[in-house]
Length: 339
Ligand code: ADP
Image 1 (cartoon, helix red, strand yellow):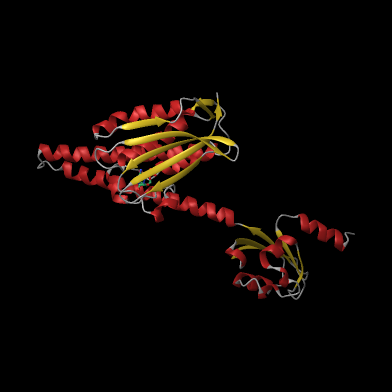
Image 2 (cartoon, rainbow, N blue to C red):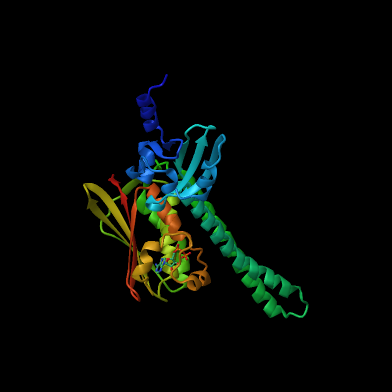
């Protein structure tokens, strides 16, 4: 026969919260986890006095075998709990408690993402289908027709970009927990990103200028394509959000932080800037300071979220500093080994 102490020590190592109830519904025993959820005061108290749920009242009044699960929002820290009430006819019962807060938070993120993506896709689709209707009419002149086709092309490009960015993010999430292992030359990747954007900047009367405080080569453990994507997104933003005919600077310098050599690369532009309250939210998916401006220049609202994910994978940090109507600086620093 199992002794009471043995039973109690088994209950302590179970990861779920367990509450044992007497035949008049008072708490006889609660394991450590259950006490974390409801506090020590529950011992000896009737369960319905601290688990305030109609479902619980409904089941405890039944004199039969019961195994029923229901959701309950915990009093402490507002956890989302899943409670299973167990009872054999005529015997004291037990409640098993599982914390579902993480799953719930994950579910909320998923739901928000689906809602945001549907919203982002809806507006180009509405524009495209509206113009198709107009183009079907034979009264439309050639000039207008070309203009409408051009808008349709821009909107379909926007959808392509959005899907490419979503795909990038989802790939990054899959690889989130694996560290990249290739040895790559960091400055080379910055140059690849710069070279790809030089022409676009020049077309807008802007120059991209690189300044490196030394001539050393910096090697990091990383994935070249991802590092290029980081600088492509940061330089692209600097082009998009800077004043007409202004230059973009990329400054590269060495830093020492907690005995670790770091290389800091800053992308700097002059423009409207970002006021302080927006700074902590810029790397959230679809967050834009000025939705209309971002959309009109072809932004998806995902660039900085992608940057954040890549930097986490590379053990790198980003800081953002900005003055309204002044300088905006996005700096990233990577741990490096000199060669
Ligand atoms: P988007 O596709 O809208 O550019 P991002 O995730 O790349 O999305 O950036 C999020 C928002 O951060 C942008 O919509 C813009 O409001 C702001 N932002 C990013 N870079 C800059 C910059 N260099 N100057 C001013 N605002 C910027």
